[in-house]
Picture 1 (cartoon, rainbow, N blue to C red):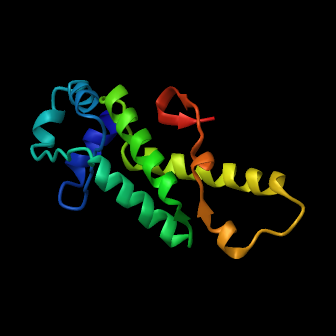
Picture 2: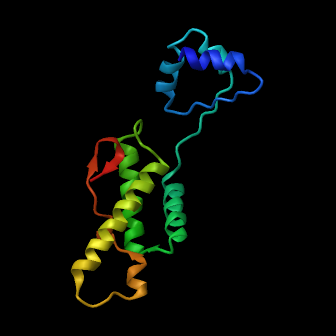
Picture 3: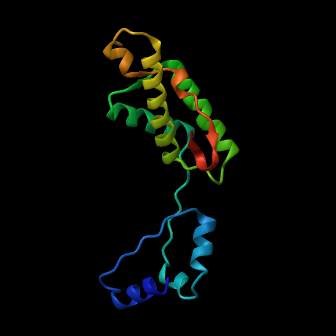
Amino acid sequence: MNTIVKAMEDYKNQFVLILAGYPDEMDDFLQTNPGLPSRFPIRFDFPDYTVDQLVQIAGMMLQEREYVLAPQAEWKLRRQVAQEKEQSPYAFSNGRFIRNLLEKALRNQAVRLLRQSEETPSKQELMILRPEDLSFERVKGNDFK
């Protein structure tokens, strides 16, 4: 920390440092050195995304990969996001939660398609996530097994 404070002083006209984190942890961090609060006078607090926004983000992430959610899968995703936000309001990881959830769903889909038949799946089947692909277990830190 002392190295960062020194660099901020020595290179004050050439140095930009942006800190990001959860509010309580950032407050604790700024208290680790008496000179830090005055060196970070500007603070931005970004509210968590809503469930609708997170579902929209999931849709955009999938669209970038040319995937879509089946209607029942979108409903399941919406329900799971709402439940996770409610159960872990202070540890909810917002966009990271969605990214991790979708990465797990894509792995689940690949396994499902491998097990489902010996026939080659159609392109449509390869690009759609079904409700069963969104089966996941919650583990510490909003990560998924």
